[in-house]
Length: 117
Length: 112
Image 1 (spheres, rainbow over the protein chains, first blue to last red):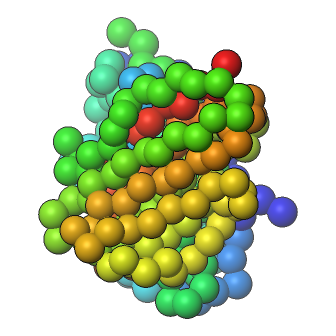
Image 2 (tube, rainbow over the protein chains, first blue to last red):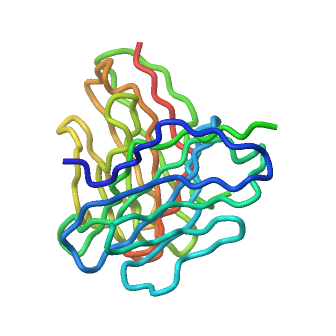
């Protein structure tokens, strides 16, 4: 079963508008972390934002905010005032135990965001 | 710039060959992770090293191995290469296990 689900393979947004990228997750752990990464066409993976399961406030980093709804197991990324440079693949990831005190990131399949001028 | 350095950026080789991918983590980061990104499998965790010791293995093939050296740089060795090993290989580092992992730019491996 998929642990991270991103239901939007592709999204379009008008420049300067806000956009929400969906992410739902599945875990039975009480302590976990959720991350969003951006992958431009050049290929690098850029860390955007992190939300811990015990964090009471939604995380924000500049134009990025994470809409964390624990009961619904969703961690949607909101990008405000979209810019042309925001066009990229966006991955939601969850930190999972990997054994021996280690953790790994489990990624969703990604959402391709295209910003229209 | 994440501070994580991966070399080479591109690698083209033939089936049956062996290659070594290199990663230098961010200054101060003791953990190094390796991930593989392919079209069919997406992003998959391969292996985690912490301060020179292997800590966890994910979907890493037996033909693949890794190590982390005393200066904390890491190498991923891929042997008996097959066409299906063509992928983007990422190294990531973190200052502690639970925090964000910062990724390098990746090594794009093409098997001909």
